[in-house]
Image 1 (cartoon, rainbow, N blue to C red):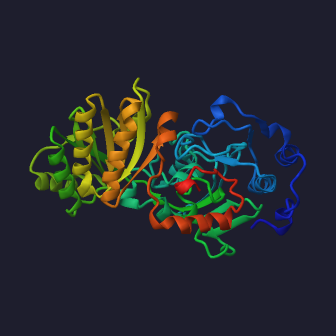
Image 2 (cartoon, helix red, strand yellow):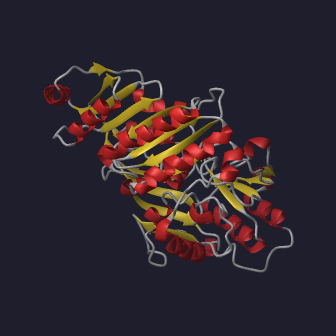
Image 3 (spheres, helix red, strand yellow):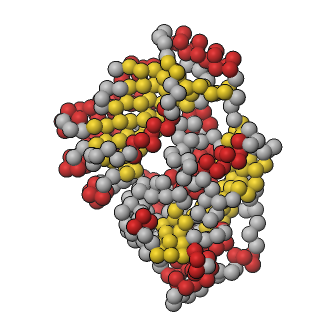
Length: 433
C-alpha cells in the first residue's frame, strides 16, 4: 500500500509559477526533455516528454499538470499513439517507460502484478518460465506495454477462448489528475468512489487516469498448438463454414476470417491442448465441413499487423465491430464501394466474437465517403466503426469514434468526476472527451 506520507509529498496547492521546474524536481532533470518529431500524437506535437520512475512520481507529475492546466498525453510503447482523435492540446507526453518491473508473480495462485511500462513480450517470457501466460496476443507485443494494451483494450484473437482484457484484469492502480493513486480490484485496500476501476479504465484511452500497475489472472501454456486454415474464392462459403464451426461443439482457441478485395478468403482455427485432443478436433472438423483443411504455419495470427504497412496508397485502418452473421453483408457493402470507386483496395482480418480490423486504400477525396457508408452499415446493425489510423486530412473530416449513443452523458459525467479540468488526452476519446 502507498503510504499517506508518500501521497502527501505532492499535495494540492495553487498553480506553480514554474511547472517545468517543479516536475523536474519530482522526476529528476535527466527524465524530462524537449519533445522530438517522433513524439507527436496523431499528428499533434507536444512540448515536453516526461518519464516518471514510480507510481508516486506519476501522481506528483499529474498533480502539477492539473494545477497548471497542462494537457498530458500518457504513453507506453507508442505503438497506438495514432488511435483515436487528435488531441485538442498537447503540452507533455508522460511516459511509463521506466515503470517496467514485474512486481509479483504468484504462480501458485495464477496471478501477476506488473507495472504498466512492461512490454508484453517481457511479461510472457517471465511467465513462460513457470509454464504460464497472460492469455492475450495484442499487436506488436515486443513494443506494446501493459498500460498501453489496457488503455486501448487490445486483446487479440485469444479473446475467443479466454475473454477480453476486462475479463483478465483483476486489479489496477491508477494515477488520477488530483495526485491520488487509486487502487481497485485484486489485493485492494478499498475501492474509490464506488467505481470498478479495472473495467472503467480498460479501453478509456488514458482519459480517466494513467494506469501505473495492473494485476491479472493467468492461464497455463498449452502442451501443443496447431493452426488449420480453409481457403475459398467465395466469402459466402467461408462465412457459412465459420458459422457452422461456431455452432458446433469444437473446442477452438481462436477463430478468424481473412478477406481482401483480391478475392482471397480464408478461415483460420487454432487448436490448443494435448496431441490426442488436437487430433480429435481435426477429425471432428473434417466430419463437420466435409472437405480438407490445410496446416497454415506462416503466422496467420499476426497478419493483422501488416494492415499498418505503408503500401504506397492513402489508407485508413479501422476497427469494425459487427455480429459474425453480418460479416458477409458488411463485405458486400465494401465490395459495392469498390465498384463505385474503381480504385479502392481493402483487406480485413475478422476475429470472433465480432471484432475485425479493416484496411482501406482509396483516393483521399473519396475515402471519407467510403468510411461514412461503412459506418452507417455497421451502426444500423448495432455495431461500430472506429478509425485507428488515417491521414491527417481524413481525421479533420471524419470523427474517429462515430455515434456514442445515449451513453455519452454518463461518460462525460465520469470524466468530470475523475478529470474535472480535462487534462488527460483532451479530445481524443468518444464525443470529444
